[in-house]
Image (cartoon, rainbow, N blue to C red; front, top):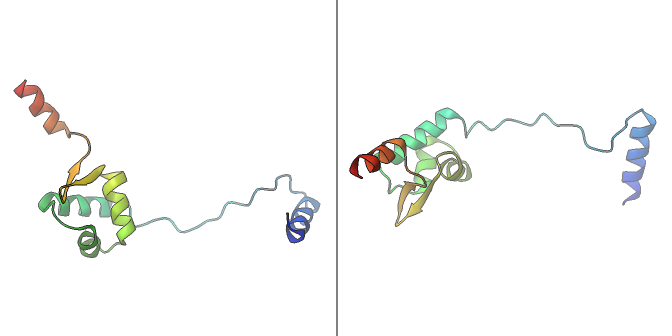
Length: 101
Protein backbone atom coordinates (compact mmCIF):
# COMPACT_ATOMS: atom_id res chain seq x y z
CA UNK A 1 0.00 0.00 0.00
CA UNK A 2 1.34 3.38 -0.89
CA UNK A 3 2.11 6.09 1.63
CA UNK A 4 -0.32 8.47 -0.11
CA UNK A 5 -3.17 5.99 0.30
CA UNK A 6 -2.40 5.66 4.02
CA UNK A 7 -2.56 9.43 4.46
CA UNK A 8 -5.83 9.53 2.49
CA UNK A 9 -7.44 6.88 4.71
CA UNK A 10 -6.11 8.56 7.87
CA UNK A 11 -7.65 11.84 6.76
CA UNK A 12 -11.01 10.17 6.06
CA UNK A 13 -11.14 8.40 9.43
CA UNK A 14 -10.13 11.58 11.22
CA UNK A 15 -13.16 13.32 9.67
CA UNK A 16 -15.45 10.60 11.07
CA UNK A 17 -15.69 8.24 8.14
CA UNK A 18 -16.23 4.57 9.01
CA UNK A 19 -15.52 2.88 5.65
CA UNK A 20 -12.56 2.83 3.27
CA UNK A 21 -14.79 2.34 0.22
CA UNK A 22 -15.06 5.07 -2.38
CA UNK A 23 -18.11 7.31 -2.53
CA UNK A 24 -20.55 6.46 -5.30
CA UNK A 25 -20.03 8.63 -8.35
CA UNK A 26 -22.83 10.13 -10.32
CA UNK A 27 -21.52 9.19 -13.75
CA UNK A 28 -23.43 9.71 -16.92
CA UNK A 29 -26.18 7.21 -17.69
CA UNK A 30 -25.93 5.27 -20.90
CA UNK A 31 -28.30 6.74 -23.46
CA UNK A 32 -27.41 4.49 -26.38
CA UNK A 33 -28.98 1.33 -24.96
CA UNK A 34 -32.38 2.80 -24.18
CA UNK A 35 -35.70 1.56 -25.58
CA UNK A 36 -35.67 3.97 -28.52
CA UNK A 37 -32.34 2.69 -29.84
CA UNK A 38 -33.23 -0.95 -29.10
CA UNK A 39 -36.42 -0.64 -31.14
CA UNK A 40 -34.55 1.08 -33.98
CA UNK A 41 -31.95 -1.70 -34.09
CA UNK A 42 -34.69 -4.35 -33.95
CA UNK A 43 -36.54 -2.72 -36.86
CA UNK A 44 -33.39 -2.57 -38.99
CA UNK A 45 -32.56 -6.22 -38.28
CA UNK A 46 -36.09 -7.37 -39.08
CA UNK A 47 -35.95 -5.52 -42.40
CA UNK A 48 -32.60 -6.99 -43.42
CA UNK A 49 -30.87 -9.64 -41.32
CA UNK A 50 -27.68 -9.47 -43.39
CA UNK A 51 -26.64 -5.98 -42.23
CA UNK A 52 -23.27 -5.63 -40.56
CA UNK A 53 -23.02 -4.16 -37.08
CA UNK A 54 -21.05 -1.16 -38.30
CA UNK A 55 -23.82 -0.24 -40.77
CA UNK A 56 -26.55 -0.66 -38.13
CA UNK A 57 -24.62 1.52 -35.68
CA UNK A 58 -24.14 4.18 -38.34
CA UNK A 59 -27.83 4.19 -39.31
CA UNK A 60 -29.06 4.37 -35.71
CA UNK A 61 -26.37 6.84 -34.62
CA UNK A 62 -24.74 4.85 -31.81
CA UNK A 63 -21.29 3.34 -31.29
CA UNK A 64 -20.26 -0.08 -32.57
CA UNK A 65 -19.94 -1.48 -29.03
CA UNK A 66 -23.37 -0.22 -28.00
CA UNK A 67 -24.92 -1.72 -31.11
CA UNK A 68 -23.19 -5.03 -30.45
CA UNK A 69 -24.39 -4.98 -26.82
CA UNK A 70 -27.97 -4.31 -27.93
CA UNK A 71 -27.89 -7.18 -30.39
CA UNK A 72 -26.32 -9.75 -28.06
CA UNK A 73 -27.62 -8.76 -24.63
CA UNK A 74 -30.91 -6.92 -25.17
CA UNK A 75 -32.23 -8.60 -28.32
CA UNK A 76 -30.53 -11.93 -27.56
CA UNK A 77 -29.33 -12.41 -31.17
CA UNK A 78 -26.16 -13.79 -32.69
CA UNK A 79 -24.78 -14.31 -36.20
CA UNK A 80 -25.25 -17.54 -38.12
CA UNK A 81 -23.98 -17.57 -41.70
CA UNK A 82 -23.91 -13.75 -41.91
CA UNK A 83 -27.49 -13.37 -40.63
CA UNK A 84 -28.67 -12.20 -37.23
CA UNK A 85 -31.06 -14.73 -35.72
CA UNK A 86 -32.71 -14.87 -32.29
CA UNK A 87 -31.13 -17.27 -29.82
CA UNK A 88 -34.48 -18.44 -28.54
CA UNK A 89 -37.75 -18.84 -30.35
CA UNK A 90 -40.20 -15.97 -30.20
CA UNK A 91 -43.79 -16.60 -29.15
CA UNK A 92 -45.08 -16.85 -32.73
CA UNK A 93 -42.48 -19.48 -33.58
CA UNK A 94 -43.32 -21.49 -30.45
CA UNK A 95 -47.03 -21.38 -31.32
CA UNK A 96 -46.24 -22.47 -34.88
CA UNK A 97 -44.23 -25.46 -33.60
CA UNK A 98 -47.12 -26.48 -31.36
CA UNK A 99 -49.60 -26.21 -34.26
CA UNK A 100 -47.37 -28.27 -36.54
CA UNK A 101 -46.88 -31.04 -34.00
